[in-house]
Image (cartoon, rainbow, N blue to C red; front, side):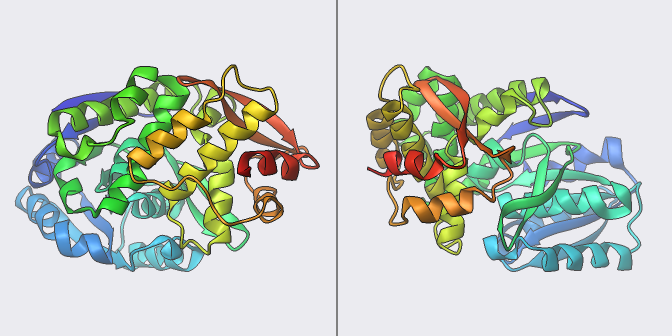
Length: 354
């Protein structure tokens, strides 16, 4: 078992290991004993893990309510958010109480945003059950929902009280969902750690429990260091968006039929290829990135035009003063932030598609 400590506006531990769910109640009782808890999860995760967590909480003296919404990205919207907020009000949750997000990135984002909004802020805990959520979305305090015009356009920075990554839950993921998480793992390697990239580029991580724990801890540590330095994404934290500017556009253009990890994979390829063609990279990283993505069961291309992707990217939250922030690799293990003007965006994305 490994522990990584985040020390941003709030200090908290990320616990990474196996068979943690049954001890969640005991782990929380010292700090939160006596409070009421609302467990938030989706329809799929509910059938797998809610009982284990609720039993653990109940055995340690917590009163527990449960809110379940339909699984999938399409639930990450204002209607479900307000259903959750009304549920919390109906159950008379107070600022002394606690929300727990049990599930993947959608559950974590929704619960975190609700926690930030309800009573102008109450405490919450993340229990991610997907690889993507373990290494990325559960850590760092970014929360949010999608609007009709784009992904994650409404949200808040709201840090959790604790994160518990039970890697045993990853056993129930199908290969595609696990691969989605590998897109974010590969991202960390490209932006910050050549050795991590080389470790995971050929796949096989799922079959090595010890290596999986080490890789998750390494990814979380990279994100921890970046969040500690730049919690609200005014500078270096933007590096974590490698692949996401175009990736979010791919998701939106597909009406979210393309998953987040797959979309980010395509976005990384486009960014790397376009960067080299425009003289922004020391070397052409795209071939190595493509091989690593394919080696982990991820796509490396999409059918959407540069015009269509650009139109969506211009509505992205990374847009500022007529420029879009693009993260591009100088080499594997080192990325930088560049500004692409709105008039040049179609051409830049087009260079990445070819």
